[in-house]
Structure formats: C-alpha cells, structure tokens
Length: 58
Image 1 (cartoon, rainbow, N blue to C red):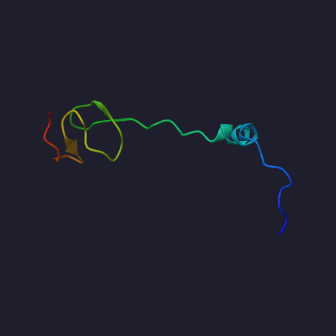
Image 2 (image 1 turned 180 degrees about the vertical axis):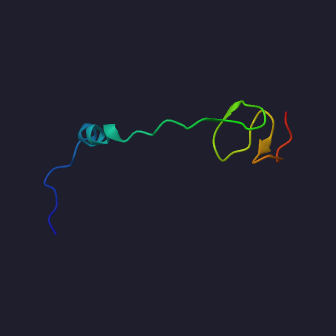
C-alpha cells in the first residue's frame, strides 16, 4: 500500500476542517410556562415535560 512521502502539516489539516461546524441549537417554548427551552428536555423554569412535572422547579 502506498504511503505519503511527507507528513501533512497541522495547518493543512486544520484548513480542511474549517467547514466542520456545529449547528445552531433549536429552541422551543414550554407549553406550561411559555419560557424558551431545548426540545425533548424538561423545562428548567417550571420542571414540566410533556405536560407532567418531572423535575422539582427551583
């Protein structure tokens, strides 16, 4: 199997990876308190998830 003749520099590797970015975080409003929250997670404000209290509100 063929091998590269020279080592690839860090700058060259990093230039290729500049387009690997994380997407923006989706935000929805809580059905109970209408505060912004991440989808599929309990609301940090009221502690409800899918209409049921799952976490004690702090």
